[in-house]
Image 1: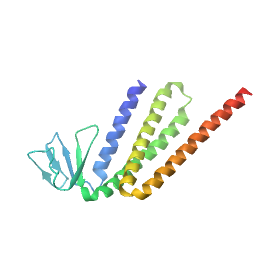
Image 2: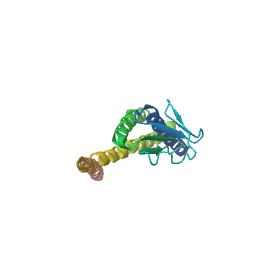
Image 3: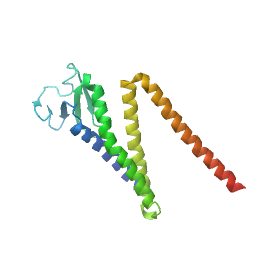
Image 4: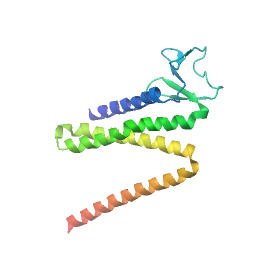
Length: 179
């Protein structure tokens, strides 16, 4: 049951951040929802005979929701701005969610009945955090190629240092217990 809860939370989280980006990102020009068979930006409506690729030759890029058929369109020249706003919007949701998940976990971790739900909540928080980290890495690599190498190397160094610390700490604890 906890696994189903985890899947539902991941689907809800993915759809939530897509919809927040769709409504709050000022770079988005047009939206397409196959249920309505039209394109709209709130100000105007576009009807096309072939809705699958209406903007292919007009310099527009699109992004599709992983959960629904909704598409959003933005100018290809605004790709960097779109990604920046998208990351800011996602970070405004994911970082507080990540911190709240850990707070709730450590506050209620001794309650045996809640343990499966809390573990699912932590896994969900990490899923969303890695989603944000992937978007951030993609943005840096696309927009700031020279800086991207340094950022990635620094992040890898930090991760490996933390991993080495945790592994060393566990081995030292194991040696102390054996003595």
